[in-house]
Image (cartoon, rainbow, N blue to C red):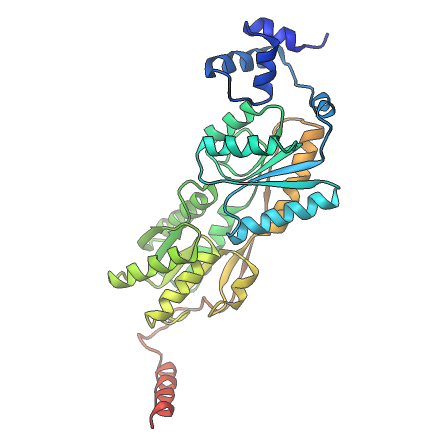
Length: 353
């Protein structure tokens, strides 16, 4: 015999209206009451009838996206992949942009999407394990898929292979005999950023090399620029820079150029993301390519599959690859490049009256 709302309400000692509010993610429920209802749901094995819920609110065929600031290249490309795949599968999309990474901000964004009658939500923003579990429990009537969540979190998730990518980046620099590294990570809240930085550290230690400076960036070019300006002003010795995304790497290249430091001979730089514009940086950037478009597309397929079948938690990891360009090379054997100095002198001669 199927378990009903009334069975859950009876076991939890609440009204059926309270059970309904809990399963619909309403905020006007005391945490203790919410816990009793969710414990009863788990004990009885009650599964909310998502099909009935959709019929009762006229299924919208809309996928919601909770996202960081879409001015960030990677975020925008993932959102574009979501939109394209959703359109091909006859779904529309609705976007809610976060003001910050607080749990209240996530709840507000999800409620905003629920008001637009979304069928499922893709969360393209960093969350902790605790936050992810809380959101899944509070909004149990919806299927959620997370793109930046700690490994092992028992929620539906999708990501690129950040550890493998970080290993490819530093191994490439080690092959070029680089020994002293400046590391620039993304925000601490980002699982992707932390995985990359931890792998860099691990390889630096294993090979007996040096991390001479560390900076936490914010994914924007200016944070990479400020990091290198600070390292140069402090006289930090380094012959390589590992950067957690391409936008910050753009700032790194700009700062090195202003300081008159040759890239790649004196200092080699590797980014992460493989955005299209990185091939037009000066010099063109060596980077780790992750397919943002495919990440967005796969997220749509996963969230719709889980919405229809809902068979356990699914986690998928997509491969990455090294794209070698002109921002990396073998370390120069001498402290100066004779041909480069001669070229500069020739340019000066031409400018003289």
